[in-house]
Length: 340
Ligand code: SAM
Image 1 (cartoon, helix red, strand yellow):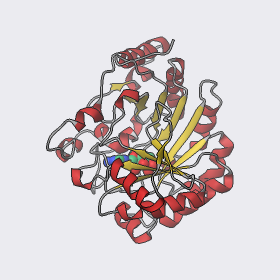
Image 2 (tube, rainbow, N blue to C red):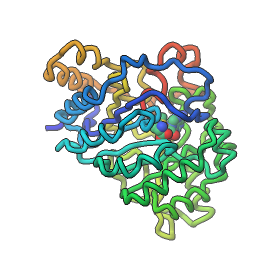
Image 3 (cartoon, protein in one colour):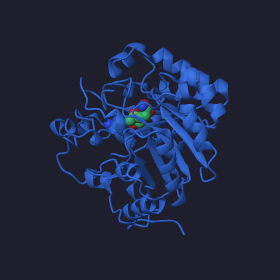
Image 4 (tube, rainbow, N blue to C red):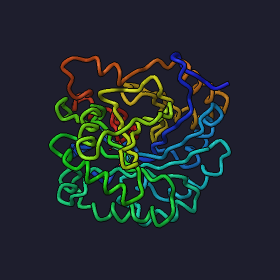
């Protein structure tokens, strides 16, 4: 029987953050000049990551996503992918990347057994990309997307965070880009999590507004039946193209959340809004048995009651969730540490 939490949510998906470092400084995630990084010696080795992942597999996880920070900043990611892709419990092995280093990595990742790639892409305008991420890297990202296509990865996804006044005029061009790239685009509402220290309600472009803009251009999008645990609600445009919307801010979906998160230094987190996690690195390195570690994970999930995004929705006068002064003292509160 699968492991469920206090709200009956099964544990089926694990997001492994393999580094807290990132080469971009996206305005909604890492807007500061300086960060407190995880100590290098705390970052789990591939062997440690794989051992912990296996325990989650024993408890019912069958979908695994590598994320970060920017996962491709970690050396030899294909070696990790190769180790994970041979696990019988892994039915779906995906990677989320900003795409900057993807062009050189795509074919090796495919050979290593990676199933799918999601590329984050917020704009098609080179100057805007540089302004929003503080790196002149749009050509590299586009090359990365092309490399994924050439390599023959199925199910390419593009994730776009829409923020008002920054890229909300690119909804249609991005849909057309995805169509050309043979990808499914998913528009993500701007969330007030972690490093989003400049978050304000009026910068959020809601699912409703995104759908209205799509409707104005293409005609009314039709809802497609939802895979119950997937974060994106999917819609079909009248011309048959499918797009997704991840409405974590205005229409959260906590009740179907089946995701656990492991930071690069082995802290188990559940909700993106969690203030605390459970350190698995210390017991792992102290020689705890598989059974002890599995029991720890089981107890954390069985006791889970969080509904972070739904609770945030009820807050009046909402602003950034974690004040900068608090973020500066605890790297685990950052989105780039917990993996998004
Ligand atoms: N570096 C990788 C990437 O860019 O995809 C993986 C890590 S990144 C933290 C994962 C996802 O979180 C990205 O799609 C990013 O756009 C999203 N993200 C970060 N901060 C966000 C925020 N405040 N609101 C919504 N999405 C956010």
